Length: 279
View 1: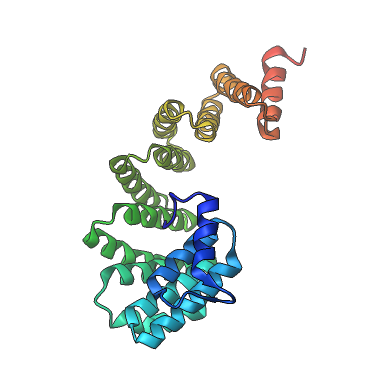
View 2 (view 1 turned 45 degrees about the vertical axis):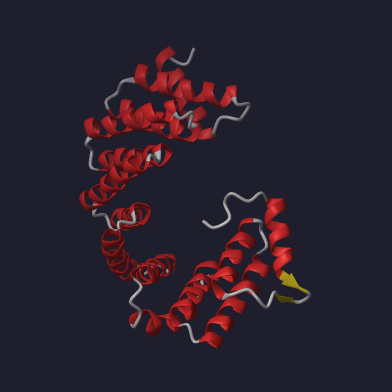
């Protein structure tokens, strides 16, 4: 996202420089306004972000730059979850030759439909966005869209299809070097295998996730992976292995000075009672 290298202080200073009283610098074009809007969001200034987007929309209309107007409307839809802005952008996108714009539009339509519980529309929009992202060789965009398609398939109970989407997502994350993303993706694959009672498959994915999580010192990923492995140990009635994984999770929380979640403590107590006969 634009402005990630800026400190909060630098971002505040930049926004103040571009502002003039109640308005904005006359030399600011729509593209700059949209970049600044994202920066404003990063430093928790949503009202300023909305003002910058409104300014960008007006600038694009004044210059009759339809692509820039569409980008501004998509930014508005993304930031304020505005379906009306998406509707306004539809005709502009339809006649545009900018595949990045079309991909972004379909992606935003998918997100909006997903947030409103319309899985069918979301799936169709994400599929169109994915095809464009593949043509553009946008691997980050592909990974994000595959994740969304995988979660929709999981919600619909289409677990094999969900596994295919998430497996492709993990492959792309590996190409991108996003190892923490891989931990999450592998844990999801482990969970999907567990849902269809493929314990061996689940263990393979949870162990792969755990290995990367420990290498990356990803505590949350380690917890999720070990919890999954504990559940698989429980499924095959291996109490010693389940106890081992849960004990290591608890030790991790203690080392960080954080309280252990109640479900983990409850299960450890159950195991202790079972192993020691309640003594």
